[in-house]
Length: 334
Image (cartoon, one colour):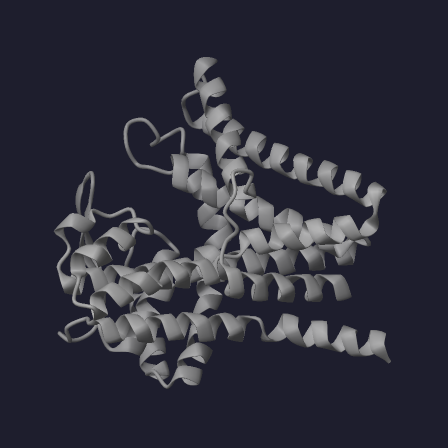
């Protein structure tokens, strides 16, 4: 249990300090390569419908977990410390709150310098929408929506499944750290499947169904818990926390996705702005319902406040794991 809390705390701090590690063998990149290869094989065999997509989910998840457990066992037999460091690095690689903030920082800085074109270049590295058509206000709105949505996808959901997997393995009498890292990798597999094949076009409407549904399922509880941690973050940063709750419970189910509007609607309420609405993608415009109230122009100051909200909410979510880590550290020292 001590390793479980200490590992995720160090992973969180590493992510805040250094952001996501960038190298060719990054776990998420390897998962993406595995999914691509498996898709090619399945389509080559004629499995291009819903059944093929389910096989893709089962195969990519099974192989990812198998590779993880084999590598961990090999390192453990070499030296137990290598296994602990490997699990720490896996957890660190799967948290992305620090990296998220690092991606939005140059967007905000460029806007503050009065250079929206430079801001668009940095924003294009993070979002899938067509940034060329965005006004200054549109850039600010897109940055805030990215912060809110990826607070769940990039941080809270991995954290949730890390803790859930660790507690499950602990209750079953197994090593909790293995269950924690295994579940965080399972979530990253689901997230990568959704980003690669979860499209509603002719090619992926049926084949990507399984991956998209698994991602929806694994984000379901974290998306709803996000309102609690964002509320705490809003309290810490002096934002309109109770207005965030009011808007979130009113607007959280307005989007087609069962999960994405929860954190976005809270952010809209806490900042006193509107988010979503007509959104331009390379495939064309998608009309989304507005989240939030009023006609306040979204400005760079709102982006800065959203960054502070994201950072504070991340710390709020880590209070429990940090208490556990400190408790066991004190016990070991005593």
